[in-house]
Image 1 (spheres, rainbow, N blue to C red):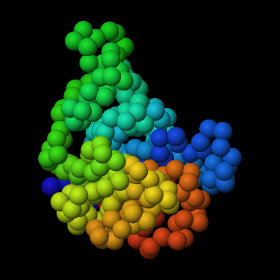
Image 2: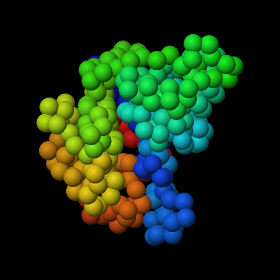
Image 3: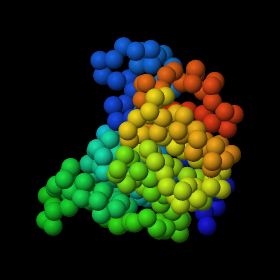
Image 4: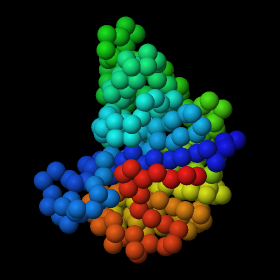
Length: 259
């Protein structure tokens, strides 16, 4: 089991695929002066002892690593293969060059296939100089270990697409979900901290609305829940936060929590 007293979580990004502000949008969220309304593409970093694990690396990955002054990572774990969750993979090269190391990648076969289509030069048998040096580990919907730390996948549906969330002891992280089967909900129960997506207030075909996310939180009953993968349609951070239950809050970029 993981020693949760040494677990820290950093929200590298909390926005949807467009990020916030959205290009060419002048709505009140996109023009807000509150830094919490500015959102890079969704990703988190989990620190357990000396190890740093990044879940998803979207197109903002390079800046997120620089902003948080990250000098090494132990692995990248992928939830699914959409571009806003994998597009930063080429920037892993910096860890190859500076640290002279290969970076471990944990992903399903379907995600690896998406990576191969997005970056056809990475998985070639004969790689050209400058391609990211990665070691792929295939995962399924069953627990796996990295450095002795257990990651339990939680399968959710992103419309009809299976996506993996992850539970690490008392912490559960779920993004891009619009439905969770009851058997997977049972895996989440008992989590002290739950991170779950809510795209906007109104219903969406492939993401939870805020109301739907709150229903999951009510069933799971974590001590604290954080809402992520937010679009500009969610509303202003300060206003929405005031309307939420005591144990629920909107996450924001750069938020650091202890689990």
